[in-house]
Amino acid sequence: MPVLEGLWGPDLRMRDAGLDVAVEAGVCPDEAPHSPVWGPLRTPPVTCGGLSLALELPALIRQLRAAWRARKGGPRGPERSQASTWVESDKEEVEEAKHDLEDRSAHLEADGRLNTGHAGVLLVERRGSYPLIDLRILRTSAQQGEVEPGRRKVKRQLSFQRYCHASRLLRGSVPRTPRSLHLLDDDYLGQAAHMLSKVGTWNFDMFLFDRLTNGHSLVTLMCHLFNVSGLVHHFQLDMVKLHRFLGNSRLTSTSSFVCQSVDTKESQGMVQEDYHSQNPYHNAVHAADVTQAMYCYLKEPKLAEQLSPLDVFLGLMAAAAHDVDHPGVNQPFLIKTRHHLASLYQNTSVLESHHWRSTVGMLRESGLLSHLSADVSQDMEQQLGSLILATDISRQNEFLSTFREHLDNQNLDLQLASHRHFILQIALKCADVCNPCRVWELSRQWSERVCEEFYRQGDLERKFDMEISPLCNQQADSVPAIQIGFISFIVEPLFEEWQRFTEPSPLSQTMMAHLHKNKARWSRLRHAHTASDTHTHPRTEEPEPGGGGGGGGGEGGDIP
Image (cartoon, rainbow, N blue to C red; front, side, top):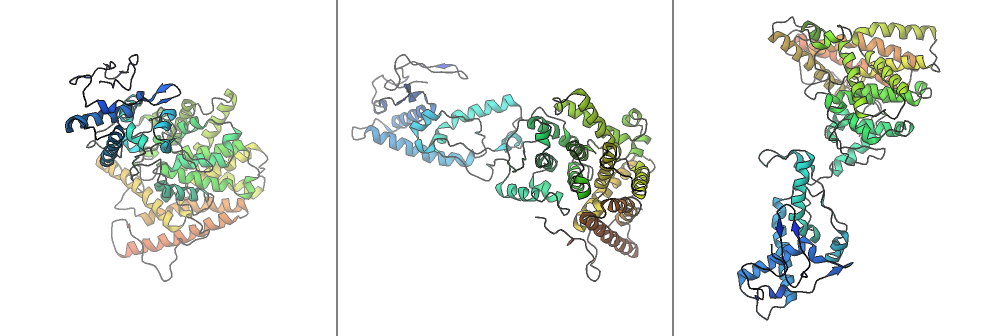
């Protein structure tokens, strides 16, 4: 690449490490040293702090392009001044930049750090201006040319783009298109922040929140709850390690819902990623919903004033990880297929044990509790295990009878750590099966999702000529029938005792009201299903019976 004799002194050299091009001062191939083509470009160098701005690649590009156009158009006549040459070349560059923006709007310019001293001299009005970040370039389609998310490849591409587009960045021609996003669209970000401000209300729509957070509801919710509950400050948690534990997400949520980019490239396989999105029910959205319900229960007046920060930490953490790495089938299926997890845990609380051990492994891998003493961290791991193991539905009667006995004898003392831990177990069990206590619109979606997961297991068992598990036969078990049995034998007995414990609170009264309405609605659907003599589970709304009977307009209608 030639340099301009009038711009660079004889002692200046430039070498591009990527191209191995050395340039000599005053040398111009294919042109005589004193050619009139290069004459107009011999202008005095502009300096800043003793450094020549000719070292700026964008300025050199502009000069070379202007010289090339001058060469193609013939020698410049004396009527054209040096100033007009620069003005015309800049105008042509601006026009070219406008055309290039449409084709290159998706380019990532995040790593293009500009020299503020030089840029300030060239274009003062653009000082401190940086382009928006387009994260989609990391996951472009094969048609556009895929870019692997590895750090080395990304940096090479950023370097290339930085040099190719530096001139238009200095001119301020930054693409502002719908594809150029920070992390979330401003409208979606505002709606998600508004929802988080009402995270303690029972009508919280986790499906909507998951869409607004681009599928990162669990990470966003947990970071927010840890901040507003003061857990980050109390336990001196490292936010980078917290994100590494929760999942490989670029989304950060603080108490003010400020999003920022966190490099979690090495945090593969953490909580968010270990929930399988292909599961209709046991996925990260279910974990986020259980966590939100657990947060509501922890705020119950009778419980909140007695809980320690450790209790809150354990309750939220257990709720977020209680179904991590769930395979989408139940324990009997793992046992009869001789799955290695069934052998490992000796056919006892197989899934729950796996959820707990996976959580402990991720805690240690992320180093979230590494700053605590070994005794403290091990005790926290054991208590997490005790909470997660309590969600085993086969132990329902064991916990329910103990809970009822405590209430009958009125001997629950929340000053005792053991009694508080037992109440956390009951609260997590309630949060895990609270779907029938939600408003109808949300409850129905959860019911259809869990039944769909049952039916998939039944189809798998039928495919391999296995005995179809109870509730998994789509031809014999309808959604209304499954839900009525689930409510009658699991949910109602548990929440009746929880209502007794809260004496009763407005939240428990709201939940029981929704539960009774939803049960009645499923009963009407089952009768309609039986009367029509159809063998397919209904997926549509029931006809409104006389005045509604729906839980959609239930109490606490302050959901955004």
